[in-house]
Length: 363
Image 1 (tube, helix red, strand yellow):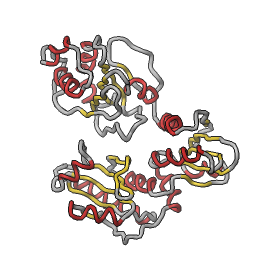
Image 2 (tube, helix red, strand yellow):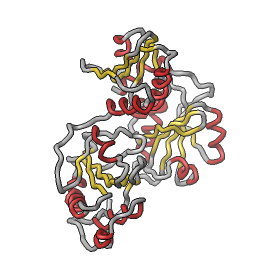
Image 3 (cartoon, rainbow, N blue to C red):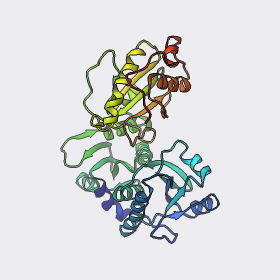
Image 4 (tube, rainbow, N blue to C red):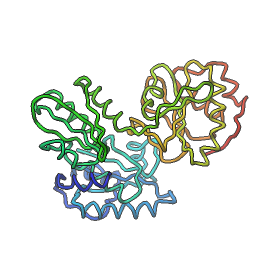
């Protein structure tokens, strides 16, 4: 679990030279540069005080700082009021939502940003990042003791694959621990705590191939469903890359949860959209149960509520999040605005509101 990672990596935590307090530091545009230059690692919480949950969220953050200190983490925590420091908010979290935690290293933002609001999860996040990327162990049994999910590599430290391993480790600090034994030959395995099942890596010694293998191992997924005709395309974690990140098609993706009343209310509109755009050659309408599946690219696709709608332009990985009236006309107008391919002319009537869905509502 995350807590097992947090406690076991504490001994590996580097110390920070700055004197660290037990509360997050309030940062403004005038203090930002100096604070980040003075601290090698910083956890920053970007928040909006208008959020009705902010008082509760702030208490969780304060408790997280104190707990992190007790566990040996000396990384400074800071917070930015985006209502007052609008330039900082636009620069680092341009699309929201707030609050959002972001990890900075050497004064620069990293890919690690999450919407965590519970004390334990904030601490887990900080501890998982404030450690060395690769732990040196003597054998596989020791590697299994490091964390619940481990990639264990046996290979020469002087080999090109070790450099690949190190680069990939830096990209997945918050999701998996990587352990290593310096020896001849090469064997890399994914070990899942409590399970006898292991996965051996047998692909090319390249960053792209190894990173893809790691992402697939970490992605939660339902079984791949049988293909269906007519309605929206069903996506699961293991098919996300194939069905959502398409080189020649735009994709509208609904993230829903089967238990969510708002999702159930919106689903008839979504399926009607899929049926009415079925013959559009460069547009795919898809859906994924976000409670049962993850994305292999959490740094790009994040959701904190259901339903959430993403538009993924053809050939790109960065999605655009939909906000507005969730009618067929509203969704098509959103797709048309963000598409680089363009929608076929026969959809113009729907775009203009010529065909309403079963429901129209804001979320």
